[in-house]
Image (cartoon, rainbow, N blue to C red; front, side, top):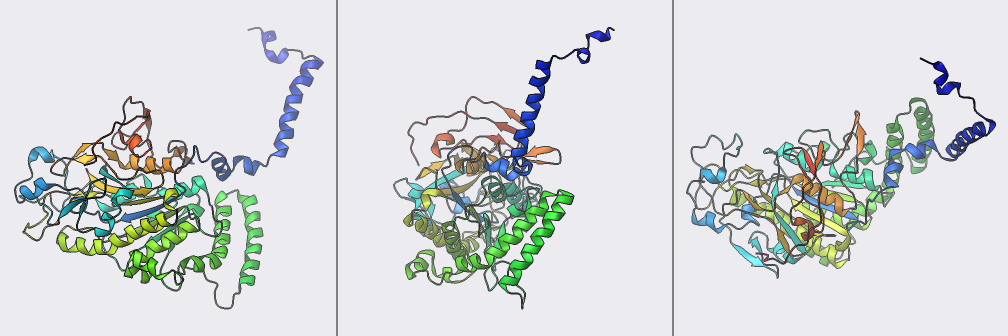
Length: 514
């Protein structure tokens, strides 16, 4: 080997030396002008690049109906079930799909038609049950998706999957992702607020459903409650004035900066920002929670229960007020839809609690000019089966979990009005056309907010995660027609095979809506 051929033996001229060293000096000069913390800060990195494209929605109100409402008794009209009531579910229809342990041991699977009457409403001709008279009035403002499906067959993993993109706990919720990506429009209120209907029972709801997971803690949902103290531990202790609290925070901020300089943990600064937010919320929260100045017609619009703090109706009214204050994501949880038995009686109670407030919220947003920039979502974690769980009578039946098809509806920003997407077979057991997976729904939500779900990521434990977390990317030439119908790329990824699917834009021909 001839060592003389190596570059380190090359003799630089004065010109070479000045050229190469000047580049290095320039880099050092530029580097001194840029704050390293601002250059590599994750929040700045994200916010300087979001939204990825013009957003159709500025804010979201998500009315999650925990327990899984029966689409067959509310939206998905199946006259064949009434005709074949009491006869066996054909094996060819079931197709070997798994059942829960609550009904798998049944010797018989008798089809159960709905005892409730259905009619078409609006110019769109949407089928609606008599259980939802108020929502029936606004069907032309709604987009029904009757072909939703999920992977999970039990409540907790299904709700967790819907809210976080994974059946396993520990991932950030949708609201946290949006908070992380889009930041705040009101520095005095959290970006992500949670409201839970009081005194409702059913499947438990855990705070991890609105948790930040591995995202910085400042992005977790903040639960507002009814009563004297809407946010826990927000008030100053006895004897501590606002001035004293402010002085304490200033000293704490100095100490945390020293701690952060020594340790370098970004969570220290995140925690400090939460302290400061709590201080600002001491004045902003009482204002937004005060509904005493609402006119009488507003209470009539939402229903008499809107005067009862903590009810679903009262929470819908609060959701509107929070949206007016530029809160980015408002999540409502309403329990009680888990109706394995005595469904006809139980579902009447649920609809009485939710029907008028839901319609009232959408009407209220519309009359205030807020619906055009607010996305409203209504739905549960999965659907209900077409056979009866337990004894079937003329007036009573139950329905077990059914993950392979269910219905949700959306209204507002970016959503085409008065349309129905997808359909199920005549038994209401399988999807007939336009399947929409939970990940498709999540990608749709993000898209409407101006976010490419594949590009909003967070590095955790050595790899980058996203809400619709997948492992490979595949190209398909044709995608679900839902793309143009609700103006978004919906058929983007599949949890079943852990594939992300890219999309192309389609133009849909006119079609019947019935």
